[in-house]
Amino acid sequence: MIELEALCEIIKPLEGLGATLLMVTPQQPAFSKKLIEERNLNYGMLSDIGNRYAETLGLKFSLPEKIIEIYSANGIDIPAANGDDSWALPVPGRLVVDRQGIIRSTSFDPDYTHRPEPEATVQVVKEL
Image (spheres, helix red, strand yellow):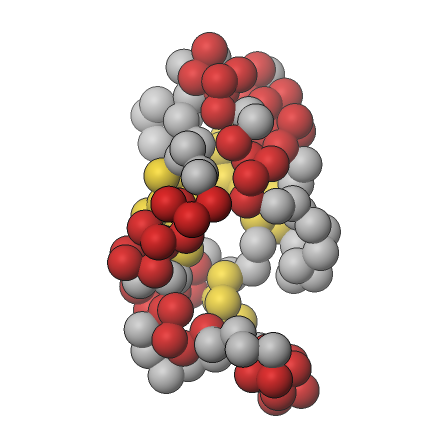
């Protein structure tokens, strides 16, 4: 699984290609801001309140009860972070969007442990 800090390593290569890295998350802006500051992240996060954008892309899912129990037992409170009462998350993945707003590449996997490697994102942008 990709750590948030690993994405920081591709900022400069992406900027050199004229690209920008943004993370889209259902977390409330205040929660994301705290995460950015605590983990010293150097990229922006956009808030998809209620997972509405993820839902329009067919990428929103609700956690199964067994996972909710595990998360709760470990102090992971998805509803608090997202500011609603759902245990819904977006499918992890990557969208590469060109300057005209056209999606040029996607990579999504419902298994949260399988995420696109940061270097693969740089390679996709190079190929545009």
